[in-house]
Length: 169
Image (cartoon, rainbow, N blue to C red; front, side, top):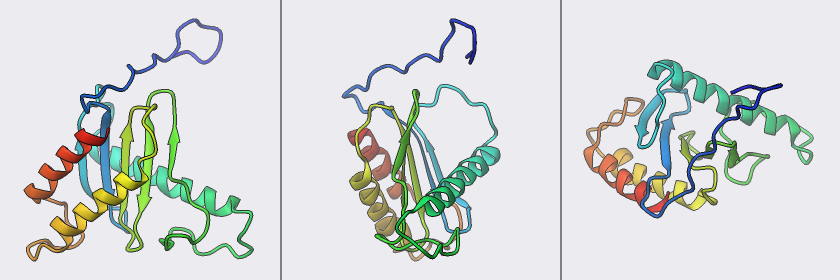
């Protein structure tokens, strides 16, 4: 990619298909920034090692949350940045789009952050992220063998997650 003076531009991804091949990656972080789950469906380039990738993604989310909290024109008192907000509190972002992907984001009241990267022409995924969170609660949180804060290894959760993401994206 060249920014100035060249004819080469970043290629646009192919249009979304009905085959469910439009989801690229998904992250689930806890409130401390620990990546509990990372799934990959359609990622052609692997440029970073997974630890760097997770740190960069969490840093991006933290920065975007800080920016939206600082830019909120309706809140005279800015709360503690980095503290999860309840739904409806403060100004938050739900997604952003580039020429190659769309990032959709949801944070639960308990601080669980779900990030889904999809094709840039994918529509609003807020309800889908809520459904994924409900899968997380059903199969992970309610599992007596799961230790909070550890990576998710529940086969039922990942199987249902993969099926659902293929159907929405």
